Amino acid sequence: MTDPMLQAKMDSAILLALEEDMPAGDLSTMAVMPEPRRGRVQLIAKQDGVIAGLSVFARVFELIDPETCVEALVDDGDEVFAGQHIATVEGDVRVLLEGERTALNFLQRMSGIATYTRRIARFFEGTKTRLVCTRKTTPGLRIFEREAVRLGGGGLHRAGLSDAVMLKDNHIDAAGGVAAAVAAARATAPFTAKVEVECESLDMVREAVAAGADIIMLDNMGHDAMAEAIAYIGGRATVEASGNVSAENAAGYVDLGVDVVSCGALTHSAGILDLSLKHLEVFE
Image: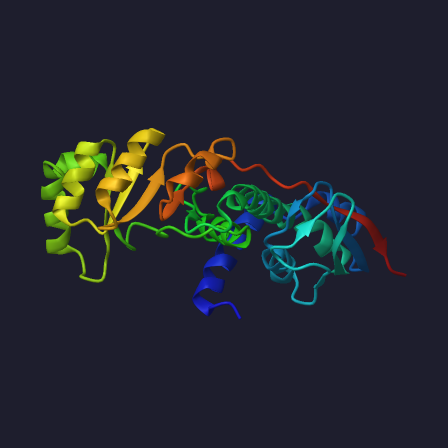
């Protein structure tokens, strides 16, 4: 069961999307279906991929009319194939038509992220390395995109700025160096919050280790430099590798044995999975 507060946040985003799509009703649907009629329509995959967001898809229709019924024939996280019948939506035809695009927008976006995540996550199967997303998400849609990453087989980085301390280059510059930034974080953040330091060079790695960082991010460093940094850290901190990770280069991180690979592309560069509502039947 979804946490009530989480569901409320999701509902708020869905309602905003519906308001955006039909601020004064659906003119097309009002023209062809002025009175309520029962009907059903099929959700069909037009590409191979990983489905994610079926509950969000269903919730769009439910928020328009709670009597709408969505019967899913697969589970979130399942692989689907072009031409496959994934779900059936049944209810007032006006609701099916009004909610179609918004429901598909959420489902296609989430499924595209899950599909891309699964593609990269397979490189790290059987290793200790965890693939995680970043905060490079679509504003207002982070809750959905993070769930899509999880369903695709990825892990989650901090959800937002309140979750952990991550000292990036500008924080370090503002504090006057790595040691000063870590000391300031230790003095002000809750003791339960981990402190991560973004390092762009071996010198910064040495400073982060000396300062007692819990997590050291190797950012945009070459393969050999990362290997040298990992050897220097020697288990004294969790090691995260980051910087333009994609499906095209992810294999190059496997042999490093880092604890975490963070990949903004999971959310900022994934395409959609093409899906469609087809074969509408209107009951007599």
